[in-house]
Amino acid sequence: MATVNVALNPNATTHSSRHGKTRMPYLVEAYVDMAAVTTAKGSAIAAADVIQCITVPAQTALLYGGLEVITATDAGAADLTLDWGYGGDDDLFVVAMDCDSGSAAGSVSAGAATNFAGLRVTTAQDTLDLVTAGTGVDVTTGVIRCWALVLDISDHSNDIPAADRDYLA
Image (cartoon, rainbow, N blue to C red; front, side):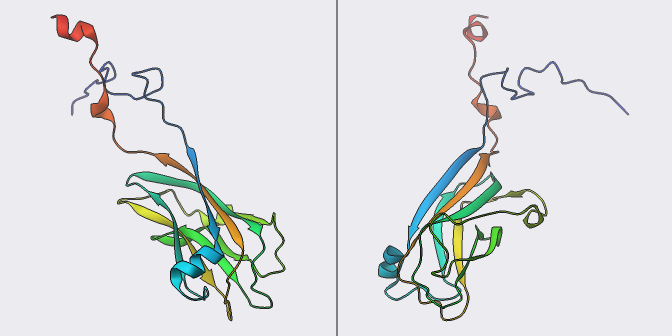
């Protein structure tokens, strides 16, 4: 058995003190106007519709997310709920947020700790999706803010710029 020390390798770390390679989580958001979705769809929004809101690249860690009602929907007495997630888990961030017309502007639903069974990482480009559920949904108006906190975890080890001294030898 051998012990190999690569700790002194200058390319072995991307700590912020090395090579200026700091990575920070960042916020992505979209405002979903149900009237615009209805127009694009050609009919009222119904149960099990998938509204693709935000495209995320491969190798993106999905950290946290939520929904906010900006303008109440016209779901009336219908039983409208919204899930917020991605193709691999359509309710990763929010499960069954109540968005009937009784949901006032400013209502917020964010991911509960029980929603996160482990870190989710996209293996290919994917979309963050708003999925409708309920009975007699028929939504035609309302605005929902969809947001997520994500982190690029793709490999950047080959992006290290060479220093001038490396060319002098």
